[in-house]
Image 1: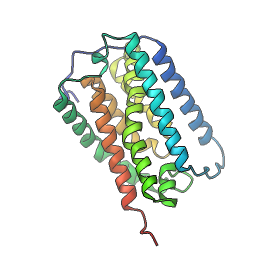
Image 2: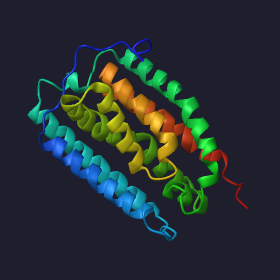
Image 3: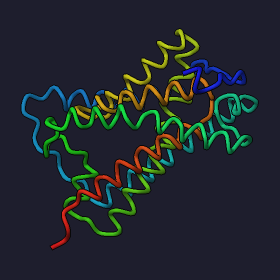
Image 4: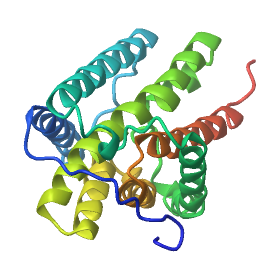
Length: 239
C-alpha cells in the first residue's frame, strides 16, 4: 500500500483513556450481540425495524459519537490533527478517500457475488428489509442519512481513530490493522462479514498511512452509498 498511500509522519497513537474505554465497551456490546445471534441453532426471523427505529438509531449514534469526540478533544487538545482530524489538505483527503473506495470496490463486489447463495430473508440487513416493505421517500431518506452519513462518521471514529490508534500502541501496525478489520467485519454478521473484510482492511491501511479521518469517512460513505444505490435499483417497481 506504500506505493499508493504515502506514509504521513504526523501521527499519534492513543493510550488507554475514557474515549478508548467507551469505544471498547461499544465494540464488545456489538460483538456479544452478533455472536449470540450467530450461535442460535435456528435463529428466528428478526423483528422488522420501523422508521422510528432508524431515526432513533441515528440520533443515539450521532450523539454518542459527538460525546466521544468532545472527550477526545478535551483529553488530547494538541493531538487531534495527528489523530486524523485535519482541516488542511482537503483536496488530498478527498483524493485519498476516493482511491480507497476504488481499491475496495472490486474485492468487495467479488465476495458479494460469491456469498450470494448465503443471503436469505433471515440474513438480510434490516435496512434492506425496511426498503423492501416500505419503499417510501421518508424511509429512503433516513436510511440514506444513516448509512451514508451517520454510520461512516461513527464507525470510522470508533474502529479506526480510537480502536486502531490504541492497538497501534500495543501491536505492530499490520497486526493492529488486521485486528481492527476482523472485529469490524464480525460485528456486521454473516455473510456480510466476508465481503466487508477487504473494505475494513483497506480502511485500516488508509488510516494507518494517511492518518485522515475525513479520507476514511469518504471511502466508507462512498461504499455505503453504492451499496444502497444497488439495493434501490433492485427494488421491484411499485404495483
